[in-house]
Amino acid sequence: MENWQEIKELLLSEIYEEPYQAIEQLIAMDSISDEALEFILHLDDNFLTADFLDGFNKFSYGQLLTLENYIMKNLSNSDRLFVSDLIDFARKNNFTVFYKNCIDFISSEKEDYNLILSSIIYISEKHNFTQISEIKTVLDKILEKENYYFNCQIVAAFYLLRLTFHQIYLEKLVQLLLHTPESNKELIAGVLKYPYNQPEYFVYHNLIASFLIPKYISLKT
Image 1 (cartoon, rainbow, N blue to C red):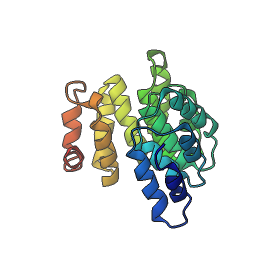
Image 2 (cartoon, one colour):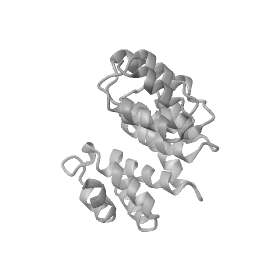
Image 3 (tube, one colour):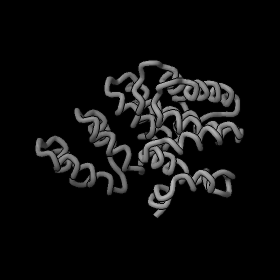
């Protein structure tokens, strides 16, 4: 791999900007070596690893298998924000083996809200029809909790509507949107822009978007 030794030195640099410059160089490449991938996965700084996984999308089939195994081994990592990044990566790359783990994360009373949020989106997208009843039960419990993470509840309401099309979840989602901080509107706007949530596939798209203006418009442009 071209310039790998130079990039490696930048990744290990104690000058704040240089490791991130190295990540930008790696993301711009058409491919990376297995050696480079292993090195990145074992950096001390999880932010660097997460930034790389979020930005690079040209992994070989063998590298994706390596990453699936890496995620499985790191689900108990004490850095729960990093684990949430790994679940996001798994979802974006269509890894379906983490469904049960995500159910457990959501069901935990002590789990970090970032990981719960990532897990809600994961199970709502990476499931089969036999799991819909379980997902509905788990997400319903989130909506029923008092003083719970507001961003998790609003995403749970959205996906319950998306999965069931029941009017009660539309009403709940609208109620939450009317009383939610702007940051949560941006979160829903991001979910709403996914291809499968466009008007031709999701009848409530335009109605929900009307509660997000201008957040929704800003994310589309």
